[in-house]
Length: 207
Image (cartoon, rainbow, N blue to C red; front, side):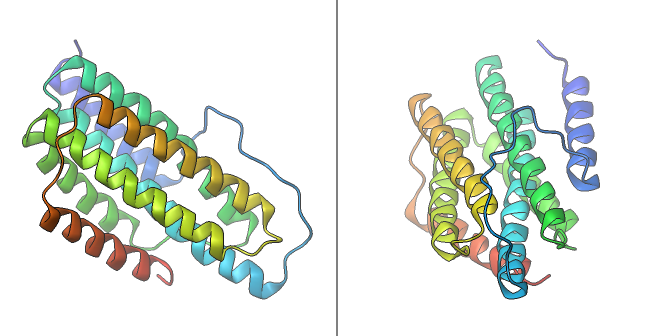
């Protein structure tokens, strides 16, 4: 079993890599060649992919914090596996932003800190509640990504391929957490999570 100090160092290293833009994907980036985009299409895609990148910054923070507070090695292993796939998403969205000539959110350190605090709170509530938090988070993210697929320009096949793969991965993470014994979250907490996510995505669209 990894000692607590080592887990803390691993979490700190993950935070530095996430916020420095040095994430590296283990899987090939989904790719789909398409026609050149207009300036308006590039601006829209850039804004949407910036929001998606913020979501992946938050996912890293959540999973790292929940892994730190997990009660069992099995749950830590499950969270670490999900975090590796989220690292792929982080690297893919970073790369796509550069291709679009756009930038990440200037508020990423703030998003990371807030998500890390939420992850710690969920983990300290117990493994079943932590898994329930994963289920609800991934359900909302899956809906969010489906919405972005309807808003991304049809010609931006590169961004669409990335978002489609992210959506499928998030759905799998949610199913795995449900099967592992997730406790259903109370409706007021689910609503609070949705409102917080709405604030984050609205802000990240521009800043």
